[in-house]
Image (cartoon, rainbow, N blue to C red; front, side, top):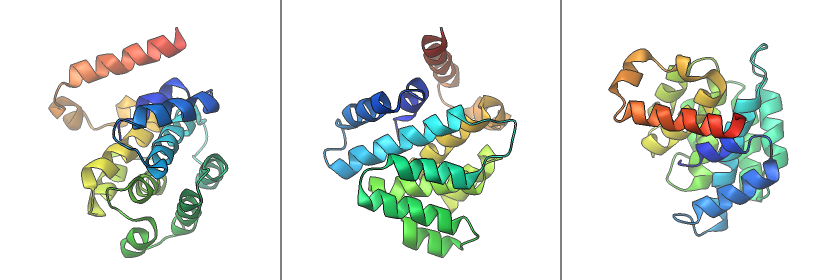
Length: 183
């Protein structure tokens, strides 16, 4: 859930993105599935960052890119499920197939689904993530990171921005990261 800056910083260098995501996740994720989940989340942010906003987001293309990126079979299966579930599955089925627990293989795919099921609305993606239950703060944070990377800060409701603890500091960090990347 803390790996979004890696996706922003390395959105144009996928090998480096994977490497940095794995290393940064080692603090809290010793298992390979945790590291792969961090890399998938970072890559989702990267794909959203680089997406062409002049046309509607093509969820099928987004999912196909994720499918090519993941290396572990558990994540391949979950990414495949995302594509199928986007055809209008009920929440119960989303939870059954993607999960909503603390494990990366249960939370990262759910967060990606939340974004892809509401690509035009930051608020709807977050509210949907929370409505799934389970590890709501993690899933909503990850869905929000992907949505924010795609839609930009202006998509975050103003009231939410005003209530964000240390919001000015967080905003400044984001701007510094972007300046570091873009010069």
